[in-house]
Length: 442
Ligand SMILES: [Zn+2]
Image (cartoon, rainbow, N blue to C red; front, side):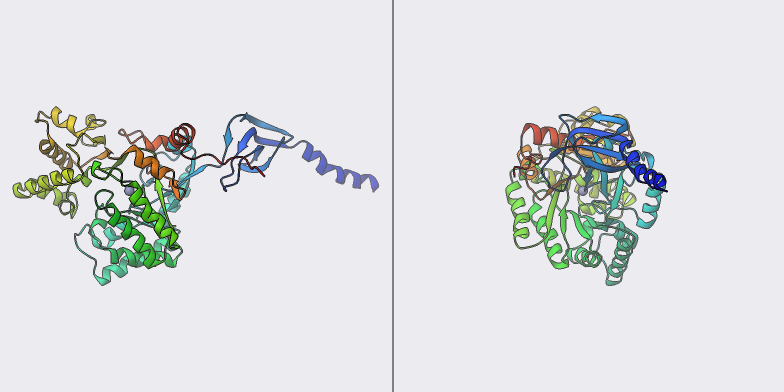
């Protein structure tokens, strides 16, 4: 009996000394993502889980990585994503993984999957390499109830939208997003969004907003988002914070002051940002809202009507002047499905290629040609580096690429691939705008 006891007693010791991990990452600087200071340690992984973090871990591993001089951190969370289309084409989502991102919040700018319960089911079934959370989109919900109509909601429609928000929140949404420059959210008033935000707040969601204007009326738009937060008692996240158009360059102090003021009053308002002076959205944002109402067929009718055609062009040129652009050379095609040979070219270059005279008016005509052919995804060189840096330093700012899962189509904005790499190399390492956590001094 005595002998048997000894065997039982020794068995666990024998197992521990033979510990064999799948992966050992040695000698790295650990930054654990909780806000703690960094420290040196090894990390042991077994069966897909971190099982030990300490100095000089003993034991062996199938694979060992020497991380001397490198930082070991948990995967980044990208708070502003649009993966609805791409993730089903490319579940590996390489562009996120290579940029350090292992979790995304999608459904931003007012557009989410129509049925989040089904969306999450599908996400589970494809076994994508990223973790996914989703917001429920205001534009998605409004389109389901009211189509792309240019009008306010009736009380019945408001109720229907609130019911859809409630269902999405029960299905697991983390909040509601708006895209108030896009169809059909552009036709909503503040009261409508406030009502939906109140419904979202009942389920402890957040309100993430692509605000109504990022140009000359940017302060009004920020104020609207904060007012919605105050009325609905919901945390507010302002998406891809920026001041856009040469007319507004230098207004970063003024706009960020609104966020800081709300925070000092006790409201939970935060922002996110991608580290570039160019944005990316569709070509339709260059047209007046009224021209877009109803969707593509209605737009075609208006463009083909000679009087409305001129009104659209005039409104486009007025917008250009208001934002202080000289012409459309700041606008570059990321993807024009109808003619991919235009990808990577500016509207100014495309206009000349079409044999038209240089100048904003003829360029606006070239834009309408492209809208008739189905529109395009664009990159707009619309921001100023100093403003980008000013926001970048703000502590209540998160990095969000505003990209999707890359599928190899078109020439997307580089933020799709390089957001975190750029933040860390340019703004942390080179410009020292902010830093990795310093070692604990105590
Ligand atoms: Zn957006």
